Structures are given as C-alpha cells and as structure tokens.
Length: 257
Image (cartoon, rainbow, N blue to C red; front, side, top):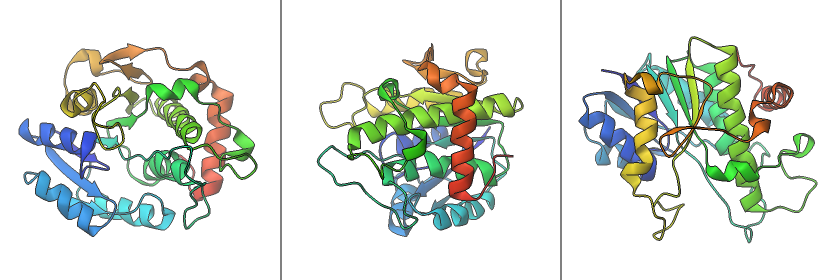
C-alpha cells in the first residue's frame, strides 16, 4: 500500500487518479485550490485520508500547502496533476506574485513543492503532447516582452515541467521522477469531444505512482499512451535544465536540493 498525494484532485484526471488508488487500497491525500474545492475533492473521493487547500497561483499559498500536506506524510509518491491553460483570446494572466499564470501553476508550483518537501520515492509530473510545440524563452518566461499567446504559454509550460521531471531524475537517483502525457482527455480543459475517457487518462499516472510493475519502475522518462516515448530533445538538455532551475530558484527563493 502506498501513500500518495494528488494535486488538483477536485475533478478530471486528478480525481480519477485518486479514486482509482483509493479503490486499490492506497492512502490518498486530495487537494483543491481553495477550501470549497478541497471539500469537493474529499466528497468525491470519500475514502481519501484527507484534503488540503491551496492556490497554486500564489507562492505563499504553495509554501503553506507544502506544510499542510507534509502533516499527512511522508509520501511514497506525489502526482503533480494540477494545471491550467488559457486560450489565445485571454489577456496575459498575472498572479499575485507578478508571474504569468500558466507558468506559475504548471511549472513554478510543482517546482516549489518539490524543492521544499521531503522527496518521495516517486514523482509524477503531468505533461502533454503539446510540449513538443514548446519554445520557451528563458529571458522572458513570464511573457513580459512578447505578445501573449495562451496556447503557446501552455506548450512552453509543459516542456518546462517535462524538463523539471528529467532534472529531478538526474539529480536524485533515489527518486523515480517521470513525466506523463495523459492524451487528449475528456475533462473540462480537454472538452467534451476529447477522445480519451478520464479514467484512461489517469491510468498511467496511477501506475507510475503506485504500481510494482517493473515496466514503470524507471526514471527520467516521458510516458505517452502508457509507455515511454521520446520527449522533445530540449527537455533533456542539461544546459536548458540548469538555466530553468536557476530561473525557478530565483523566482521562488527555494533551491532544488
């Protein structure tokens, strides 16, 4: 039996992953961005060991969330599932910390949680096939000097979080750290016409977090359609990883141990 924390588990892939692991007898902590969402997550997964609240768009709330989650630990695995995506008609979203909103939630939050919490045996970072279109500009990660495009910001964030997963794997061989493309999933983000059912989209994150199958006891991999696939080459580039980690350390004030 594993003890697993799933971020963003009030609905969608996060809730499906939590439900599946509870059904398999694992101890699961759920999360919502505020108290109402955390309560909704716990109501949807009544077998969860608890629920924690915290807005991943606020660095202060992320730090408080790390403390709240740690009270339920130590964890065998953390699934960094929570994510946001803006469309191209949306003006550049700015967080309370002055960060571009997609980057804050999809990259800075999982980085900060990873930096300040004890490392579990396994880390699962939700990526996307759209990371292949990522073209992050390291000196303009917050889209302050370019015309804002929400879709490109999402692609960039998923390339960055894939690089983060690989960087953790390289620096912490005792932790299995992988990135997952769940596919185009029928969630609020994916839309009703998406071809992949939510339970299927959650299946690979669940396997990576809790399965004893040798096929998923690997690290530094990008999983798509349930098996390892090549990620965009930049995600494995050590210079890019180092520059990204340096930028994230400056933004959050927390070095990656």
